[in-house]
Amino acid sequence: MTNNLEEYADPQVYEAEYGQYKGDFDLFLNLISEGSVLDLGCGTGRLAIPLAQKGLEVTALDASKHMLELACHKSDDLSIQWVQGDICDFQLKQKFDLIIMSGNAFQALLSESDQIRMLNCIKQHLKPSGIFVFNTRNPQEHDFKTSPEFEYWHSFQNHDGEDVQVYGTQQSDLSHQIVTYTTKRVWKNKETTTMIQLRFTPYDQLMKLLAHAGFEVFEVYGDDKKTPFQKKSPSIVPFCTLKAE
Image 1 (cartoon, rainbow, N blue to C red):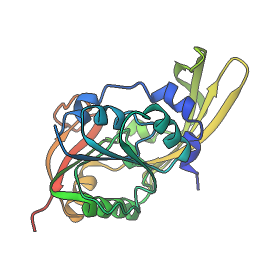
Image 2: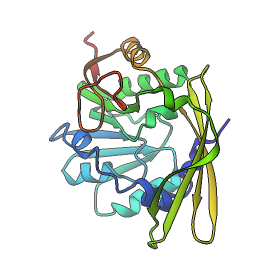
Image 3: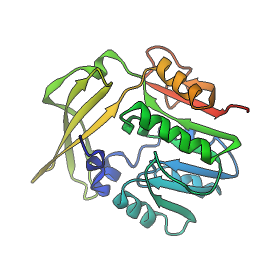
């Protein structure tokens, strides 16, 4: 079993590689204008910090102590409640107007039972009038290819301005809808290797899961730009409320 936190062991690397992404800001930052927000899988605070800057009451939860330490350091002038915890098993004794989960964090739930546990936690923490929004990749045939040799993925600059080349392999387990990625990052004088497993949940299966868990999906988009969902959309972005009892 892969330790999925391995990929996030160095928050500075994560921050340099992914922390500046703003392509989903319009999607996640403008859902409510006042009230309380729970950011699940918050990482280094990429969304939690600008949400707090808008005047919202923000609680941000992540499993990685190191990611939260960097997030806290970045936001020492903001009133954000940073919580180390499991997205499948948390008890905050509060209900929220909005719960979000970005960065395809839903795919870190490697079984349907974990998905259900997480959704049950969200139900306990969402106000009757609240909204739950998340994104997950819409599985396509190429997502399940097996590539045993390292392929070039992308590059980024670390905090010292050094270019880092990123390569990866992937191995698919179709029976469990899980892909294992091995990522190699190459600096001038060193390289590191990490592994992570992600689960791909098809649209129909996801909609049934949400309905069974007690959510009503009132809108589905196909990307961070809120393009209407289609079969070949890169993402599934459900906007959910609690079913009326």
